[in-house]
Image (cartoon, rainbow, N blue to C red; front, side, top):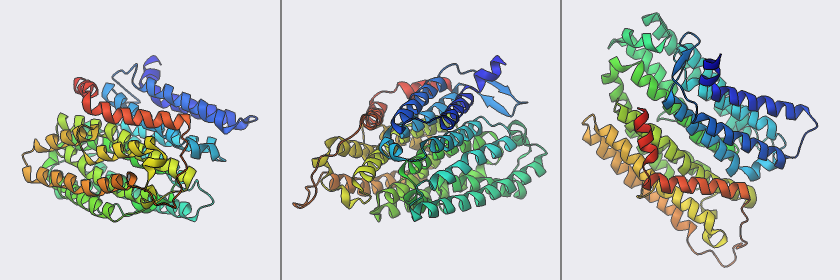
Length: 466
């Protein structure tokens, strides 16, 4: 029982938080301000718990595995959820269903934790469904907006399609190997047409979840229609969890057909980076801009995955942490402007520096990091991904990825120019007030972007775990 509680501490902690929220909901009720403070404190404790008391072990007949590295990956996702609760404070305080929102978000997070620890295809599939269905409900949380309902519909339809494709691929794998255990499947997978077809089905399902080209068509509409807190969750937590799991599946289940999946990963990676960058240039809506930006970032994650080495595992994990700080800083600024000023376009950012230097510099720092400009953490994150991808000796591929970094400079720096440009004479120049929790969230993200680039202790820590 002690091993059970220690190995599943993160999942059990989330379950405990959910029960606490349900008991509060059944009671007389408290104000949103007090409830949000309690939730943020519990989420902070969950972050600390994820990074401590980690042990290596297997339970449930090997279906659930845990080790120090998986514990760190769960901790990274826990950090993202805590930051979302801080950065979206203004919107959450106004919500009529605050308890229900966090119950759904934490249920999705629990599914992602189980998915990361899955060592069996059946448990992986159930965990994926647990993490997906609540997100569709969260996308429809702005009940008074038609776009929110449309986003939820597109989310559930695309998720159902990808889940069906995944289930079909799992059935083929079980048919050809006679097992669903990760540690047993890899020996039965060979370079044969039926085996490769099974992999293609699995890859397509993962590509839907990560918004890899050409499975990205739902992304921009869902990002624009969903509440910003949900969009942030989809952009960083959901993508981060799928990246962790996909990396593990590639390396442990399909190493025998790496020659085939390497070609597929390279082609889709180049297409994802290029299409994401080209479409991001054309966007004026902030959320659609960040949607295509996130698609381009997924292309770089695939570069690291292509290495099939410990360097790939290390670089992807490090980049996801950096991406969380960088992207959530941008989403935090977007949440403040949307909630307080009703600004949702890039043109509306003009003169932001005059109204709030804190928001202007935070947004600029996040965009510098997403573009990969040194000495931000984003530069080193992409550098490590490119170095991992270069280990296969395909330097043309790495050169194309580096050129896409240059292309992305155009639209990221264009937004920075607008933020620091002089406002029109007749524009509103009222200073923007930032609440304490939001300021704390922006500070944590900015510190992560800066110190992640100049301090190497976290990268060294991950390297030691491997």
